[in-house]
Length: 225
Image (cartoon, rainbow, N blue to C red; front, top):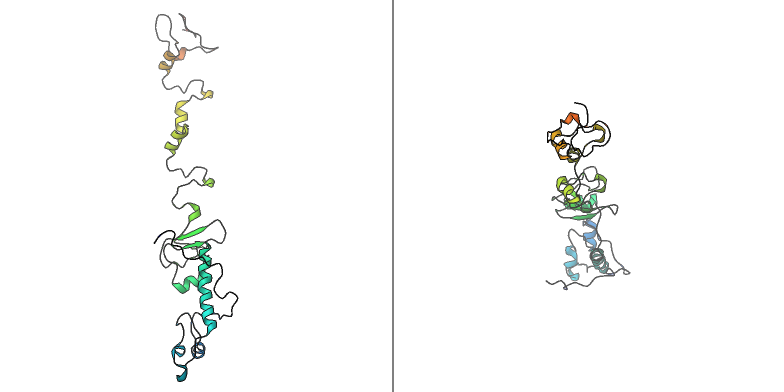
């Protein structure tokens, strides 16, 4: 079969303006005797019996009704229509089959069924087996309401955004209100800022200047001996 092997689209269901009967799901004794069709048994035997032997010809209205039902359903599908959940229909067919797709009551859901014989309502209290295709069942997108809490790899995301975690920030920066007490390697810090006397003797970390900005030291130390 090829992509262009498309059957004709039916814009008008058969016998839309013609006389037709509503075909019942199940035959009754009355329909059998009158020669009327039903979905469970079709046309009754009397319509297949010679008239000379007491048979009854099939009713044209039944044919019109049958063809109208079929072509109306085909037109709906050809037009892209999806059915919503129907408890009576679900019960009649023994539950929806796996991979069945239903429209939601609102436009915010298209339901995919993941199990066979599913009788549950996708929008009911028990919605087992149904997933909302519009809610990203493959988890490809982030939900706005989660405020990024659904990121699978937050570390990689931070690297890509070139931002730091709280822990990384705490380790990377000094807190202003600590006045340098959170420096992990104070002697190395003193050396890195050039706080050394001219003779090269390291200044103890607790002897850094307590007032003013640190000058470029050229032979004297700030603070008391």
